[in-house]
Figure 1 (spheres, rainbow, N blue to C red):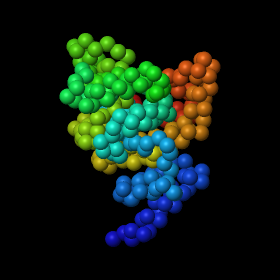
Figure 2: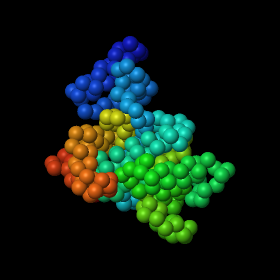
Figure 3: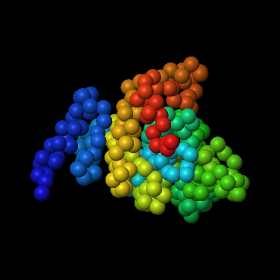
Length: 270
């Protein structure tokens, strides 16, 4: 049996290295998620910020041309509207870090029309309006959207939904943790998707419960790409925004070295 004190100390030490700038990422090994996250979110020694911590799965789904970010499927159980603002912004920032040429965010529900009886549709509409007013930046939002018309252009056309996101979303924001967790694991186990997980203000890569043969490469690429984004990519994007008259750029600057080129293609299959 593991010594709980030792486990807690190791998690705290790993977080301390990140706080000190001696490490750029946390990689979860045999620790339970709650053991590591306890150190990450600790008020005195953790690495939390004013923005809410959220989780993203980056998934490579066979037969789907683009990688998908699914959020939040592991941290926020029943997020309210304010929580979802941070969840969406975190996912947009991650999309830029991974080299998405355009971050297209679908706010998910069971239907694509606003229904007062379904709270997730009302929150989806509010998030889209907040993006229009500049309260969420860097991505294109649409919602509510059901799963089919979020990722399949033919399904979107059948429902007469016309937008840059419908049928082409590369970020799926789910209503709650239960929906997200079931979606991500369905893609892993039924569709054979490869996945990596990311959470917190600094990269913390982890593996979903998927076959071992799929586990190794994606989290490492995700970690490297996000670490580069924090040190150089975000500043370059802000400079582009300034050059364009203060408007947030929709494209991520190219990575200057081969490791970044690898990261920019994270999740894509040959």
